[in-house]
Amino acid sequence: MTTAFAPNVASALPTLPSGWPIGSYDTYEQAQRAVDYLADNEFPVQDVTIVGLEPMLVERVDSRLTWGRVLRRGAVSLSIMLLYEWSTETLHATSSMAFGDLRCEPI
Image 1 (cartoon, rainbow, N blue to C red):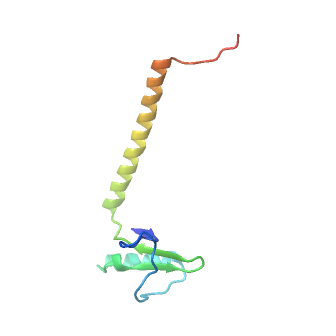
Image 2: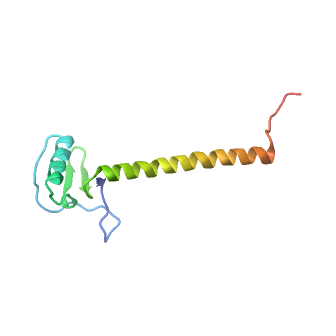
């Protein structure tokens, strides 16, 4: 899991990365694969930052993204969508009962 321009704890503004490069890659996908490889081999990826040039991109790795996290976030997103759908349908049904079907008919 990554966040682009993750804020520093002491400040709400993004900070430049610090530390030493551990690799250089031609594409973003290659850099992601390298971070995945490190995570698979128990490297502490929460200390890794991906820096891209042209355009400038700084992406800090928060933690390893597991299937459990993916499924949990998907379930939360689905729950929010279903709650929104249910609330809009309930609001529509309630307003229809209160005001009836308001239709303008030509005279």
